[in-house]
Image 1 (spheres, rainbow, N blue to C red):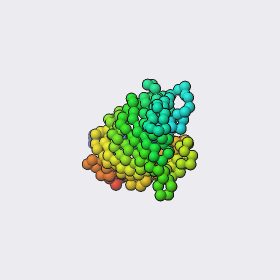
Image 2: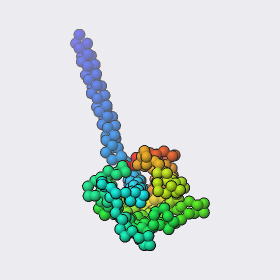
Image 3: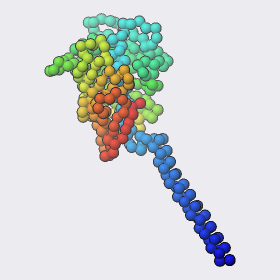
Image 4: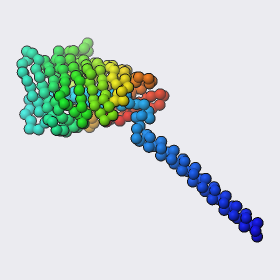
Length: 289
């Protein structure tokens, strides 16, 4: 009887040990799983070293938003408005340079899907779609979605190319965007071919551009990068009717300092903000903010 009690006691102790061991192993596994999830949720860009790719996409979208405001400004600036943005023309003389100020006021206003305040100042010599037209854009306390925009953008309508499409040269000079994660900077030159929509130049939603170009910049974390458009970007303005992201095709290579190339693929004809990124032989998805 004593031997039976000893055996039962031994089996009971062994069962408790196995349960305890199982609980410890389970706890370790769960901790590892949730730790990985937490790291990825807290700082997913850090995990993949995609700062430069993410920040370039953000400042590129900012340029597109600014260009849209300018197009709308030239088309609608003759309309008297009772709410911002307000349009002011100075020295309206077709023989020399004139000024168009787009004033969003000192408080945020929602316009074309973005919160904006401050001023965009455009110095120009002709309507933007006229051959030879030049514009120089600067900013005065201008914010998009509470992000300060500084620097200059210049554009020139180079006239028609050999197949009759209007071609524009766009220079981005020391453009900066202040974000919660640091300041993004970009210097770039773009060549834009208007392949559809020129015949209705007082509209803009039917415009389609093919865009090429290259540039240099730095992301919010201070790392420098180079940018090259390797497959021309298709910029489809009709996407504005459903999305803030209007690049529907093309590829950009981002080369951050000390890292391999990141290939940004804008997909195939969809008006969405999802960009596929190939980096270090792995594929990721970035969504433009």
